[in-house]
Length: 337
Image 1: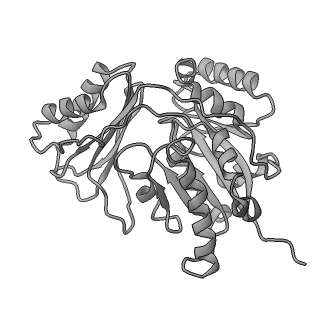
Image 2: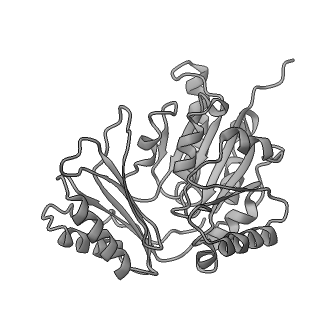
């Protein structure tokens, strides 16, 4: 009797703003992950990562119902089961890999525990490893405040040390020391501008043995809220950058992430906006393939209401059409299972 075919599954995790999506976008355009099925788990009312990946991935799927290790836990296994049957019945093209990008606040261990509860997932998918991204510049300042980061490093079968091109040498060295202390068995690759190729990743990825159960209950940062600011009108690049910089400075220590898509005056292409916890503002054109971009910004804060920051941004941009958030539009704190 022929052995069951198992599809390799790679879990990509790492804190908010550490460069997961940028790396994933590169990998799905390379031969090693050709035909991969991508599952993106995002916090917030509107997800954009699956659309950023859409030009190179095979029908990326968005896991919308909360963080994959707690609120959205059951949906991960259900989606993998549905993908198996859709492929079996030829409703979708064949896929060679499953690449699951978690939210930046996910604890990866419980995700594997929950996948292990599905007999079909155990039989038809083979976990190839957990790849964790860690920011060489800001990770050391964040790790004590956010328990997820330590869990992401401890669970990793390989760590990608990102932003090595903009981090000081002493910070890169200190980050390596931390990683080696909490997970001495995980190889470490340096990434500068997402320059780690898929073949280099797979060449050093240790044998994970397909194991699924590795952890206990999820550990989550408390008091995290999200809000979505809809921005249907074209904006001035200078005004947008100024408003985001000012807001990031005012919310320093509370802001975890801003990410979204906007229209800019005088520009044909949609632009992706990203603001990191340390206040870096990036506004770059993006190729969405055939997907329709949701224009607006998702804000993620700790210890402060994200909706208040959204309203401040709207005021600073002199934008009167702020989407009023209903009772369920701003998230309550993440609750571990």
